[in-house]
Length: 419
Ligand code: HEM
Image (cartoon, rainbow, N blue to C red):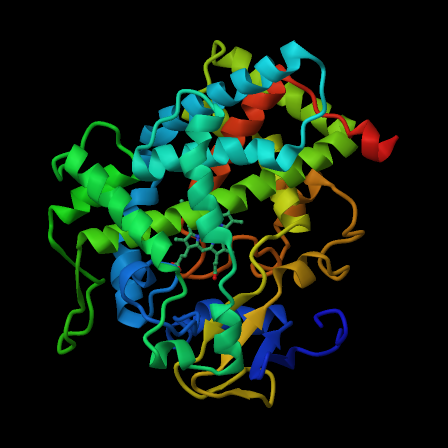
């Protein structure tokens, strides 16, 4: 649809029976996502906001503001630095696991399910404090069960597109009861094991428990006469956040890294250059993978950025209008309650912004090549105050995985497929 109307700034589309607007023009996107964000805070997914529905991704309005305000500090570089040891540990287990397979007999490995093991183990360690010492089938079983539960479609969203508001009217959730019970149970167990207090692990659960010490959390300071929104930090609220960190953080990263390895296999020159950079930087740091060392991998950073350009995963981005809003530079008015959509895939593959978009070219993200780029021409993590809160976590996690992998192995295309 994005490609079908190259001259239009905004296009009307239907999602099932619900009319929406697809925004194509980058300045229009900037207005809605950044400048006039206050009129477009929500994503407009209406369903019961109790239980897991209280998660940051689905929260609305003032509740979202309070949660976002309080959770932003748990994703700072200092906090991530403290969590790095958990990622490095999972990276070592990952390398050992591949070594064991390859030492038995040379074999071809399917990359997506392989990297899933790493991201699943990393996010479980960081979000819940679940430790795995190896990727044995028994160890992976619980995690795979949760995985199936979360990613089995329930068609609730489609139902809402067809009959807008029906989930809210029926006080229905997007999440099956089994998923809610699992995360509630998990958080209860972890909180009990830690006596309700943060430990020395410094994972997300610790950071949430630290916040829980305050009992109630409030949003950013508002105008004088306005009432401050207060959110009680219950165990079920913590479960909802643990759930969303898990759900939003694991599959997105696994898919990104499998696309990345696919492109490295097809572009051996890029792979060699990445390896050289990792090798030289590791030597500079006496073979130790530290936070600073990983941050120095600028070419790898460009590879991750180019992977996310070619294969953005969250499609479409969406916001819901809180007021009737006339779109600047057009005659179109978004009606209050209407949802606007943005297609990162359409934009990232538009010749207007990226010449020869099919080509995998990490150099596009060199500072000199990206300085003229419109801020809304690159949207893998969304844009504006409601962008991805886990972006830095995702980048660090990818750097650890790829640096560990390339220090030990090379990837080549499967002979079964490429002959
Ligand atoms: C390559 C990995 C990832 C990609 C591509 C990705 C992408 C996105 C995108 C596009 C959004 C919506 C932004 C918008 O609407 O403007 C989002 C939101 C979000 N992501 Fe990520 N994400 C990734 C990893 C993570 C990780 C690791 C976490 C947590 C540990 C995470 C947690 C979240 C949360 C909580 C939100 C909702 C933020 C809010 O509404 O305030 N994501 N992500």
